[in-house]
Amino acid sequence: MVNQIESPTRAKLDGPDKKTALITGITGQDGSYLAEFLLEQGYTVHGIIRRSSSFNTSRIDHIFSKITLHYGDMIDSSNLSSVIYRVRPNEIYNLAAQSHVKVSFEMPEYTGESTGLGTMRILEAIRTCGLEKHTRFYQASSSELFGKVMEVPQTETTPFYPRSPYGVAKLYAYWAVKNYRESYDMFACNGILFNHESPRRGGTFVTKKITAGVARIVCGNLETLELGNLDAQRDWGHAKDYVRAMWAMLQTEEADDFVIATGVMHSVRSFATLCFQMAGFDIEWSGTGEDEIGVDQKTGKVLVRVSPKFFRPCEVEELLGDPSKAKKHLSWTPTCSLKELAYDMMYYDFSVYGLELPESAKTFLDNPAFQVTCAQELAARERTKTGVAINVRGV
Ligand code: NAP
Ligand code: G4F
Image 1 (cartoon, rainbow, N blue to C red):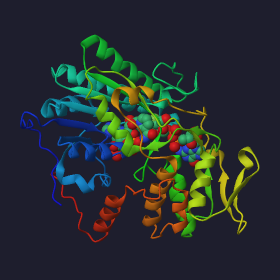
Image 2: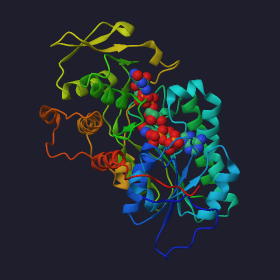
Image 3: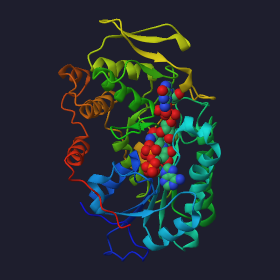
């Protein structure tokens, strides 16, 4: 596979109907699924990628030859303006962010710069390039805005109460989007997305930590999985479903903000229980707080223990979204249940560790015909192993 990073000349104008999209954060979980989805819709897809001392494109290697990448960073406004000026996108999806809530307590200023001000930089670049009537803008807003929730479930009108530097940065970005919509009549939308996961989820988010942890325990690579707050509850959906909603928001007549969620909430403990059960363990929980453990009933082995090092200075205890507005105005509904999501992630992580999920895992699925989404990723891993997928970049 031979590819190039775009040289700094202006992009050619495509045919009248072919739309061009620019994705910040294209190397992330959502960016990679969105790029695939937009290619399927016939878009020309550009993405902004950070310079890294090691390859950071594993999630997009399988579409590398179909997209154009530009080096950039959310904290470099002249670079962002220059990319936007050259690409003249019809749609910008702003997904780039320091997206880890716990890390934001350790890097509050950088999180504010990239996740908060970064959004303002893009909005201002659209305006100064004179593209405010040409470019539609999607902002990756977050259910972390609701933080210490003021009502259950949360809707587009629920008051915000962020509980981390990440949430505070996203709040700034949320209001910047509203302000530019009202001030300059820009088509700019906030997608207030609740947690969404997938086989491509970053390894330090709790669902992926659990699914990969179970696979590592099965293959003998990990003794006990250490987690933080097991009582936290989240409304978890599949990232593949959620990128459809991002696109749908930019296809409406009028710019607006939408909650995207499944409307169902589960605890970290119950997600872990489900995953261990899918792998054939009979896990039982005992103790409370920092002393709680999850033990395999067959062997007496401690599978999970709590470590305070994963606690946050301020916790968001529960998040539950009401996606009614998106259902009504975007005709959007999630297709993947929590059990299917867990199965998809477990199937992938087991394959990564050279394992197969037991046949009995399927009995947890309400729909036994469920097809895993990770066939492409697994094929890409095989190609990489055999040395076929070597990217040659234009630098
Ligand atoms: P992710 O996997 O962490 O991806 C983040 C992306 O942003 C990566 O491509 C990363 O590049 C890039 N990035 C980080 N800092 C940057 C910087 N300073 N300049 C340029 N690029 C930078 O996140 P995700 O789960 O796909 O989420 C996408 C967006 O949705 C984020 O804004 C997140 O905050 C938001 N969101 C996510 C969820 C969720 O549950 N997933 C829910 C609500 C909102 P590298 O690959 O080089 O690190
Ligand atoms: O998986 P998490 O790290 O996701 P969190 O904090 O909800 O943030 C994610 O979702 C947001 C949307 O609501 C996004 F905006 C954000 O970018 C990110 O994608 O943690 C989920 C819950 C938390 O309550 C955390 O305290 O799981 C709890 N948890 C328990 N043990 C753990 C762990 N979280 C992590 N990361 N690691 C643990 O060991």
